Length: 97
Image (cartoon, rainbow, N blue to C red; front, side, top):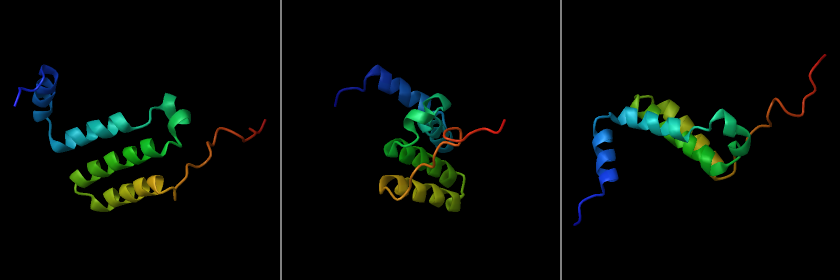
């Protein structure tokens, strides 16, 4: 078997120093929709499910299985289309003078 590419080996060394929780938190942070991308991605089912699954993993590793289950149920809702994004509160509403 050939040796792993340098970038993979370097990544493995970096991640070896992190706890499972730290890795899960990093993944959750990476998969979270950034404010500047919210309007573009807030209805993207794959993105929203991934966000919820990563969050569920963080809760599971923090020994909070009830919170993990809630996030997994939300992820399932995004994937099976039983969950929809609510309308953006800043659009479509007239502000009082």
